[in-house]
Amino acid sequence: MSSRLKTSAVNRHWRWFTNHMASALAVLATFLVIAPLVAIFVDLLYQGARSLDLNFFTKIPAPVGEPGGGMANSIVGSGVLLGLASLLGIPVGIAAGIYLAEYGRGTRLSYMVRFTADVLNGVPSIVMGIAVYALIVAPMKGFSAFAGGVALGIMMVPTVARTTEEMLLMVPHSIREAALGLGVPTWRAMLSITLKTAMPGVITGCMLAFARVAGETAPLLFTAFGNQFWSTNLNQPISALPLQIYVYALSPYDEWHRLAWAGSLVLIALIVIAVSLVRYVTTRGALKGAS
Amino acid sequence: MGVGIEVNNLNAWYGTNHTLLDITLHIPANEATALIGPSGCGKSTFVRCLNRMHETNPIGKVTGEVKVGGVDIYSDISAVEVRRRIGMVFQRPNPFPTMSIYDNVASGLKLNGFRNRRVLDEVVERSLKHAALWEEVKDDLKKKSGASLSGGQQQRLCIARALAVDPEVLLMDEPASALDPVSTAKIEDLIFQLKVQYTIVIVTHNMQQAARVAERTGFFLNGRLVEFDSTHKIFTNPGDKRTEDYITGRFG
Image: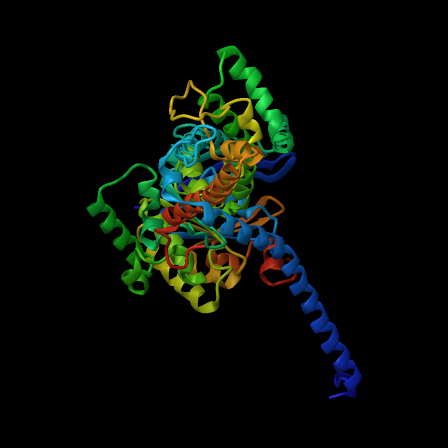
């Protein structure tokens, strides 16, 4: 073979250098991304775990000046609010995503829906709180869990809709044709084949939306309002972990700061548990070689 | 049993693009009919008109008459009913990726609300045997995804899936073009066996394949049916100069 294919020693060293340089930069960038996350997490774990005890999960907030107390009502309240939000936001979001990907392709309405969803996604969450205040809290003459659930639910819609749309568009056209070619009605092919094939991605979108609103405080300030006592009544103000953390973190008391840390840890842990649980349940029956 | 297909003055469009012009031909029952022609000549569009898949394209339009076993598929029955009677195998194997081998085969029945387990078991076994895939997959019917099989196996799975709904006609749109020679030979063997029960229409780019499997062959060019005759006649003594040019490789 010609000598052109042989590399000179200088060339080889230069390549070694640039290769390792590029790798080193990539590793450095990775660390820069992970470091703040790890720092926050470690601090949270340390501060939170130190302040966490059984009372946190069983007691409601103690009156000002009294020691002890917990956030049992906030944990349940967050559960109620997120349950309501998911119940409203996920079906509407998935239905809108299906419309965008399957039925409205190229229509004016789908363009408007997509644009609205993207704008809605960028609306500051406090604005969502004020909007729901005007739409629900003011006419009903009172803060309520229902209003809080609606505010969070609306915030879930754009994320769920857009990921559903994108996941459905990723399903190959040949799969749809296969279903139609078998004499399956269009709606059935849509639900049982296309949506089912896209399901793992759609679920990821729902979990993303869920995790995002689980930590929202601003939209709840004007809607669910918060509550120092037990309440699961949808017509009454309800407590939520982020609200309680917000109130406690701003307070002048060390005891309350301690509880705010514990609350943050519990909030994150509950989100991780909820997301992992959904993942586990939805991937349990996966087949060998399924894509 | 298979049934014959009568096509009269069939025209098809994609938007303003007139892709099929006045096609008239009669496909006999229980035979394999091959459609050949260069890319873009309209042969795929033609078979997609035979089971009303053409109209699933938003800009697709069809006029003319297609009678399958005497039933006008564009006026007497719904598109869904048509596709249940006329099965289709596509160019690229397209098993449902989230489903097991078993569910892939049973899908046509299950998705139409059929739930009897014992009958489903029978249908799945019979269809897989018919598609010459049973021996290779019988041990992991419900364990493996349809997508985990090799390309050739996937295509036979798709044939089994089409057979499971018990169609009268089987349309095959270049069923072996994405497969290696061994898998292609298996599919061709299959066509010979399937002819006994079904009427087969096969689109192919491979002229040897047409010559091997089909009793009759139609030659399409620029959206027109140039010639339709017995395969023997088409390949040995074509009536039209353009057919002769195509099969002797002078263009296309």
